[in-house]
Image (cartoon, rainbow, N blue to C red; front, top):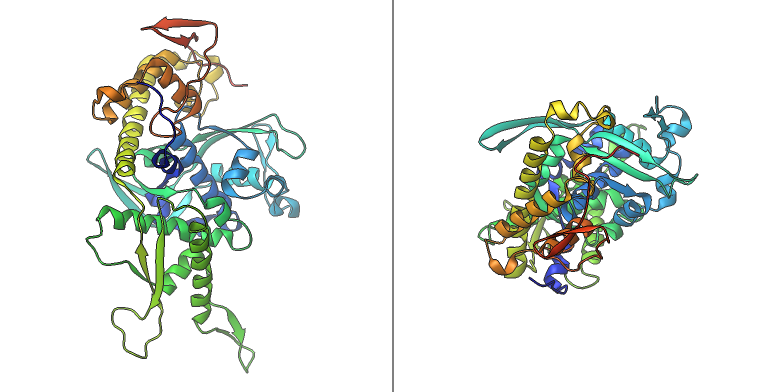
Length: 430
């Protein structure tokens, strides 16, 4: 199999990511749990899901620059001291011999110590078993390496919760992240991001029905709650606070939708797009106010992209499962207990998965098998060792491999393809 050049379809698929259904269905609960840090929490969850989607073999480590480029929040703002830390009301900000003082770092610390609390129990099936979620844990561990005074050279290494890992492969909505940075820039960015993520969810559900259902219709109050828009309170003649006419909500929702719609349609069409209009609702009369929004999704999906989404789903599901089985077989608990470098490791599997010095040949073999299976055993889609290695090093930049990295001199031959040698071990944490 030879490498293919990027096409419009593969470019689109590269920009598609995932969002856990329990998150997209309960966006307001993030605000209730984390308050002023909710935007950072939502950004982080989407950011990590994107990294998982691009490359299971390198998702745990990231820099401020990478995070800033994805979220649209400047590195300077992310590295500035968190307001609660500055006011002295943040409590204990030390963890693993590091002080988590910046906006990003303190938010990470909160995600490590607190779960998203759901206002209602979330139920879903996993291999026939009913799983009930009352909360959503995000992080198991954080390691901060290097850095300067501004923090821009720091490398963050995280361990995600089992719930978040499971949600990535089992329960998710497709999310087009192409315009997220520009959608989130400026005042009101969090509100726009939340509504955009929710719209992707609605589109995912609607498109799965292949247009065999009526156009989605939602009350402005409902959309306003998702975006975090509240009634304005003003003083009446007796100086008592009263809620302003709900037209404020309609105006706010309208402005948010206009902004999202503008950014989505500013350049070439995306996987996700929509049109909308304000309507009076299903039980209306001629004098009724237009307090509902009707969405008309104009999908740009073509058969090739639909096929690639299915391949991506099958690939990630099988790949993660088979890698987990390999790790459990090679590193049983009794063996892990003898590796001193893992004594304080929160998740040795994630650490092994993201280390190219550990069992690289076996990872290549598993990726090739999972890729072949995901492509319906198509002989034309069999990966060579070099192509599998490229996908491990560089990520799944499209569903197909796009380039092959230079191989190191100290390599061994396997079936006519060279793979760098590696110790069959888990290295120590730096």
